[in-house]
Image (cartoon, rainbow, N blue to C red):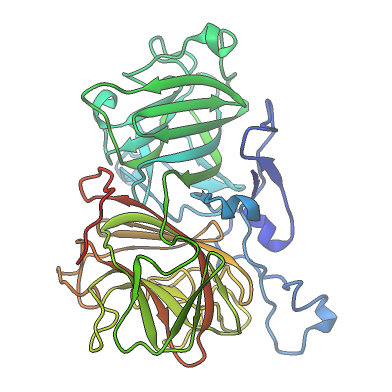
Length: 462
C-alpha cells in the first residue's frame, strides 16, 4: 500500500509502503506533512480544470485538489486513514492536558507527545471490531508507549480492558511487540535481542480478527497471539499512548475485516422498492444503477451498529443522493425516516472546504442536517469509495479514505432519526432524489456489530 501525506493535496507527494513490502528499517520520517489546518492551507489549482494561474479567469478562486492519503487500489480494498496528516480530527484524548494529561499535537505531519503527569491515550472517535491496522512510530531512547486495541476509553487493567501492543525495549516482562498482561514476545524468535531500536522509525502492521492478533514489525511477524481467556474483547477504541518520553506517530491507517456483500451482483435480491417510488433501480454487472426520482431502494434486513463500505459514481454534474441508515421501513407517506449519509460533490467559491448542496452545504460524507463534510474529496463522474461507521450514538465517515465527518447524536431518543437519536436497528436505503438522479452504486458491503459489541450475523427484519 502506498500512503500519502496531506501535502499531496497541494501537489507534493511522499510515499511509503503500507503492506510491509518496502517497510523502511531506518527511515528518517515516513512522510512529511503540513501541520497547518485545512482552513489555513492555501488551495492550489486543480490540474483537471486549470493548468496555470494565467489560465484562471479573473475573480475565480483556485480549486484545491482532493486530498490523497492512500493509493486508489488500497482505498478500493477498504483502507481508511485514521490520521489526516495535519490535524487531530477524528481523535480525542482521554485526559485534559491542562489537568496533567498528555500534550498531543501535530508537528510536520506527525502526531507528537512528550509531556504528561501520567500516561494517557489519544483515542479514535469510534470503536472497531475486526481490522488490519498500520502505524509508524518513533520512540526516543528510554521511552515507553504503545498502541491500544479494542480498548475502553480509560483502561485500568490491560489484561481485561484492552489489548496493549507495547513499545518499550526496556520493559522487563513485556518488551516491544508484546501484548501487555497477555502475551510476551520471544526475542530470539523475533530475530534478535532488540526488536525495534529506539530513536528510529518503525512500522507496526497488526491484524485483529476474532480472538487472534498477529503483529508484524518492519515486515516480519513477531507475534501470533490467540486469546482463549475469559477476558476476550470483541470491540473497542484504538488508542495511541504516551507513557514516558517523546513518541511520534504517522501513517495511521485501518482496513475493516469481515465485511459481507449486500448484493449478489446479478439481481436486487435482499432489496425492495419503497412504495410509490419514481426512481428506477437496475442491477447491471455488480452495479445498482439508479435513475430518476424521487424514490428509495431499501434493504429487507436491518442493522444497528456496523461498518458500511461502498463505491458510488454520479453520472452527471451536481447529482444529489444519499444512503439512509437505521431507517424505519419506508412507506409512501414516510419513505426515508433515517439518518442520511449525504452524496453531493458540489462546492462553493472554488473551495472544497465549502460544501454547496441544495440545502445549504453538507456535501459528500456529511451526516445530512447534522454535520457537514469538512472537505469535498470526491468528483462527479468518477468512482469514489465511502465508509461509514455507526457505533451507538457515534458516526464517522471517510471518502476515498479521507476522514470527512464525525458526529455524536446526543438528542433525545426517537424512532425517527430525523427527530431524535435512534440506536436500534434500521434499514439501509439508496436515494433517488429527483428527476435528474443518475448515479451508480457498487461493492456494497457491511460488517454488522450489535450494540453490545458482539458480531450480529443475523440482522433482523422490521
